[in-house]
Image (cartoon, rainbow over all chains, first blue to last red):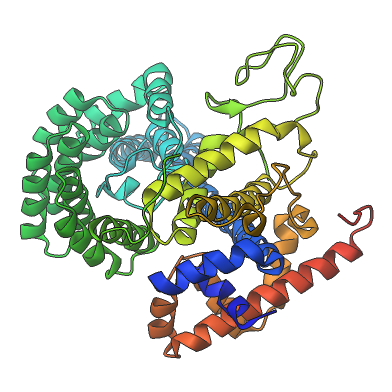
Length: 303
Length: 204
């Protein structure tokens, strides 16, 4: 073990400066101990990823169970009430009439509550979309159901499978969202399913808010309209300065326009917000953009 | 690890009629082998993140490294033992390929061949403790000192840089580096001793 071997962990974590990194690469090519050590470090990282994924999946499952339980709650309480007024049934008793009227009012109230709180098909649809361990788009939605962090899927066809699953079995749930005028959530669902025309229609029906302007920016970004995406994200930022999702989407659009320095600054702003997952990915994106801006020190030969 | 269910980009064990991911041919090394399915796309993001650290943010080098890793993994998938940890195996391949790349660059720059011996293209096995389950890894993490575990989790779970961890914990950057390397060494030792307690596991 030499003093060069001391740099193994900072090298594996990308913490060395350019010169030290290059020196360690050369050392690594010769040192079998460091090669084994590097493998161990990466494999330990892989096992940690595995533990983190399992915990995230378990948390997601618990949340989904809680959401479905909440959606079912009014219906359960209605069934529990039914035996009581059956027990007192008598046509001649005035209390039956008043009780029946009261039960009708309560049932109507519960029905309205169930419609506004989210019916089970919606809960299942949202649970299915939220249950994916990876997100299908680089952009970041602000609607509450989908604003949590999930790593970006590198998998080809992830979006296509989402579209397929939506078009085959979720029409009832989508119709229910539309009937209940939950246009923002519906727009996000259409957006995730790449049904951009429908997403634009329902998002235009939604009252303006920072979150809605952000999701309109995502829609523009997904359609390749980068100037519109920037304009919409800036509308969101004007209403809610420092909104993480809007900062993110503006930076993405700037990157797509080739304005790497502005995009890197945008991602650095996102990274500074210390939001779980998003900050780490933003820092990584910013560092990649910064690396792209600086000239390469070591020219690469042809592959 | 539970393999993902059948998907477009999924590579599955060859069956007599062929598999969805790999066209069946008599010469296929997959034919007749007992192979666990794995989903290439599922691991791309993680591998790319690690490759970017190894190449210090060089996106094109990192992409090449990840692509070469998958290519070699797919060529050698028939060697993958059942119940192997695919993530660990992919990282083992990636480190080997990274070293190969550095050596090849040296040859291009005019270094003599003897000084820059190219490695043979075989695939090494991952560390034997990588086959342990999530619960054992979680238990190993619990055995670390809280200060080491906290620093390790900030680095590996939340992907914070040494600088960020240092400012969050209020300790020097060098201390963060020391804690992370100690945590890794102790985890490795704990997992090795755990492996010795598990019956039926053999030395690599």
